[in-house]
Each structure stands twice: as C-alpha cells, then as structure tokens.
Amino acid sequence: MQQKKEELSLLELNNRIKRVINSSFSETYWLRAEMWDVRMNSSSGHCYLELVEKHAVTGRIMARARANIWAKTFAYLKPYFEMETGRAFESGLGVLINVMVEYHEIYGISYTVIDIDPAYTLGEIVRKRLEIIRWLQEDGIFTLNQELPFPELPNRIAVITSPTAAGYEDFLTHLHANHEGFVFYTKLFPALMQGEKVEESIIQALDRVYEHIDLFDVVVIIRGGGATVDLNCFDSYPLAAHCAQFPLPVLTGIGHERDDTILDLVAHKRLKTPTAVAEFLIHYMASVAFELTDLRQAVSGSITEVLEIEKRNLQIIGSRFPGITTNRIERERSALNSIGNHLQVAAINLIAKKKAEVVSVQNILRNSSVKMLNSNVQYLGLTEQFIKMVSPEYILKRGYSLILKDGKIIKHAEELEKGDDITIRFDDGKVKGKIL
Image (tube, rainbow, N blue to C red; front, side):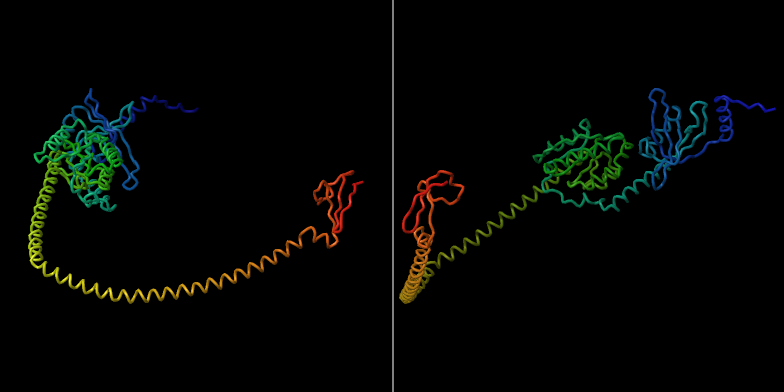
C-alpha cells in the first residue's frame, strides 16, 4: 500500500525555514558589503537598502541581499556614522555592519542592521580616493590644468555653481565691489552643488562653457557652506578628469578649509571659500597693475635718460655743424666735377656704340627685306600657276566639257530630269541639248 504524501502549505514550509534560520543564525554577524539603493522612509523613520558584493576586477555583482535599519537604531546610527566619516550615509559606500539574519514568511530573508563601524568606511574612502588619484596620474592628466599658463588679466569669468547658493552672492559682491576699481565680467553656468547628480551637473556645465571658451579667461567652481558629508560628490574620477583636461584654468572654492577633494587637487588653484576665490582674482589683477606701474615708471625713466643723451649729442653736432657742412660741400663739389668729366667721355663712347648698333640693324633689315621679297615673288608665281591649272578654261583645253543647266554647272546626274534643257560647253564652243 502506497504511503500517503506529506503535504505542506507555503506558509507552513516558510515557518519551518524561519525556525531553522532563526535557530541556526541566532547570533549577530559583522558583514562587509557595499550599500546600494539607500532609501529613508520619512514617515516611519526606517531605512531600507540593498547590500551587494562586487567582483574586484570586473565590478560584476556577485551577491545581493535586502537590509533594513529600524527607526530607533537609524536615529543615532546615521549621525554617528556621518560625524565620524565626514560622508553622507548614502549608496556607493563600503561598510562594515553588524547584522541579524531574519526570515519573514512574506518578504523572505533579510538583514537587520544594529551597528556600524565607521573606521572601515574611512579606510574604504581613503582607498578609493587614492585609487582615483592613481588612475588620474597613470592617465597622465592629474596636473594638466595646473600646467596651463594663468592669463595676464583674468577678468572674464565663467562661474559654475547653484544660482541660489549664498556663496555665489558673496563671490559676486566681493568681486564687483573691489576697492581697486577693476572690472570683472561674470557669466553663471548653473549646476547642482549637493546631492547625487552633482557630478553629472558640473560636467554638463563645463561642456556649456567649452562651447563659448573664447569668451572666458578662467572657470570658477564655487559652493557656499554646506555639510562636510556632501563633499564626497567632488571625489569623482569623471569630474576630476574633465576639470584636469579643461583648456582654461579652473579655480575651486568649495567652502571647506581642511578638506581637499580630488577636484581641488586637479584644479589650477584651490581656495577655501568663494570669497577667497574673488580675493585671489582681485589680488592677481592688482599685482599685474603694480607690475605695469613699475614698467611704466621704468620706461619713463629710460626715455628721459635717452632724451638727455640725445640732447647733448645734438648740442655737440650743432657746434660742429658749420665746419662739417663746409667740408661736405667741398667733397661733393669735387665729386661732381669728377663725375662731369667722366660723363662727357662716357656720353661720346655711348653715342658711337649706339651708332654702330643702328648701322648693324639697318644691314640686318635690308637683308631680311630682300629675302622676304624674293620669297613672296616665288610664292605669287606658284599661286598664279595653280590658279591657271584649276580654271575652267584650262580644263576645257585638256579635252573636258562642262554641262550647264540654267547657267549653272551640273555636278551630279541626279540634278537632271527628263526633258531638261542643257548646254554642253567645249573649248571651241558650245551646243544645246535635251535630256531624254
């Protein structure tokens, strides 16, 4: 007799799995992973995220799991993590977290985060940062922007920032109200300065500046204030690579004195605040103006000295001028007399030479005329003889005859028809006939 099969509902089987997992994984575990799809529920205060592990070389995801941080834990864990690491609690960070393994009948297996080790993330951040810097150096672009010559008068400025940023207003106020009276021309290229789309937004702004690159001397990227945790978006290889290879000098003033982002490291010059960027541009213009003032004074002094020397030289020349003039006139008179004597002899020789050339040309023309005349007489005789040979009279004398119809010579038989009257001309006369 066949044994009856054991039947389980889905809930019953899930409950069995739950009991096995809860009994087998009753402890907590420190788990290394990368946070993905971090979402905070504003109403409940819970945080939901995914944890992934990627292949070290290809970046392919090798493992994935759901995780959650309940509101009570998340309330202290997030600010603690951000304070210790200086980074926002967001996707893309490598973390070492303490988790409980749980199985739910509906949602399946998940990890509940109960603690986090900021020191591990700091190490990961430093590692990634050093790796990006190494990539930039290996690609040969890390110092490209710093090697650009800084313009003599950097007063045409492309500004990349958020139009609502307080730092932007501070920058403009400080720049345009400078006590030196320097004139600056600024053009805003709006971009996001915080959030996940900062990298993409700044790169797009740089591309817009590039379209009008001839209108600007420098590019300024500024960000007023903001939390230190928002700076991680400036540690990006694509953003750093764009800035490093940009054909205009890039100045940064991201608003934090002690934190150098990778963007700061590749920029032509890094300044701590937007106001400091404005102050740098003003001081640079002032230094150029000071150099121009020194140069103007030096040129003025040199011109005065040269004028004094030339004045003394003119005075010396003036005192010597009468004697110099008399001597020069005598030398020129002697030279003219000598030229006059030589000119007479040269003229006589030239006339004799030209006369001989005229006689020679006359002889050549005479001989050429005789030859041409004889040639033309011979040609005319031949032509006359040819004309006689082809004349009708000459042809008739040779025994030929001509047939005429209505006074016109007939060349072809088809020109005649039956009944036509014709005239046949011979050398000694002509006869009339009719075509039958």
